[in-house]
Structures are given as structure tokens and as C-alpha cells.
Image (cartoon, rainbow, N blue to C red; front, side):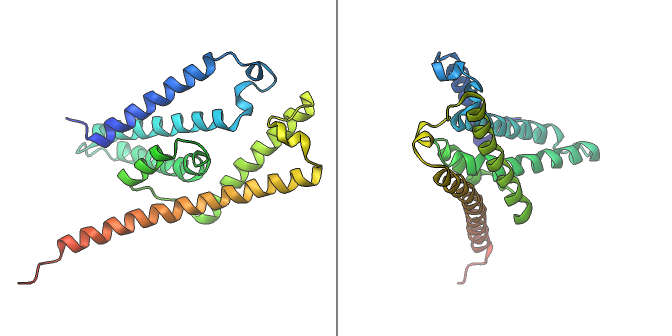
Length: 204
């Protein structure tokens, strides 16, 4: 049973992220040796998110191939859960967090090749707000422990400006979530319309 190109592409993307993460960890930078290590940087966290997301995608592809025509209801139920996890990870983490880096093309390819069911808007926004606030608290905790900000420019602005900055980033993350939802719907509504046009009988 041959893999279709989009499945091969997901494997290639997953392997590339694993390679990038290994090389990233191998780089000896002073900031990586301080409190929090690489985990204090959003770029590294994003790389981990993308690797986990594409790992879930590859696992979903393999499970789909294994359960195809099996008639096993339990396997199909587990596959649906895995697909739901894949879609949730894309909507809440992979797209909003990935937009700020060069990984965006990979996410757009994934959105174009597979339909993803977004969660309800309220639960999705609540999840992305939780991630954003969690990371902000993590950055503040690192400053509390070490006396230094993860991002040096925070050292040169006042407390009020920091609050505005952190609030703005949370709002931006919410906007990116909504952008992903709109983009996903646009891609698949357009494709559905094209398929319906092809199925219409041609007039003589």
C-alpha cells in the first residue's frame, strides 16, 4: 500500500524538525545554560510544538492506513480521537504560535492538503489565552528568579509598558487563532465549491 505524496511530505517535515531540534540543542550558547534553558525561548517552544504536531499527523496517517477497511469499530473510534487531537493542536498551537516564525509555509501546506475541524470558538480562544498567559507568567517567573528578562528590550521599558506589551501579545495570539480559523474555512469552502462545479452536468 503506497503512501500518497502528502503523507510522505509530513514524514519529511517531521524528520526536518527533529534534525533542527537536535542541532539546536547541540549549539552551546550561554543563554541555553542559564535558568530555564532553551525552554524560555518561544522559538524553541514553537519548534517542539511543530515537531509534536507533525508527529501526530504522521501517526494519524499510519493509523488511517492500518484501520482502512478493517471494520474494527474500536480502532475507528481511536482514530477519530487522534484526528481530533491533530486538529486541536493545529488550531490552538501549531498555527497561532507558528505564524511568528518561518515554519508558516509548512503549516499552510498542511492546511491545504488536509481538512481540519476547528474546536468551538470559545474553547479555542480559551485554550490560546491559557497558552499565552502561561508563557507570560513563565517569562515573569524567570525574571523573578534570575533578575533578567528573557528578551532584553523588556529591561528598558517601564512596568506599564510591559503590561501593555504582554496584553497586546495575548490579543495578537487570539487574532492569529481567528485568522487560522477563517483561512481553514476559506480553503475548504473554496475547494468544496470547485468540486461541486465539476460535478454539475455540462450544458449542451
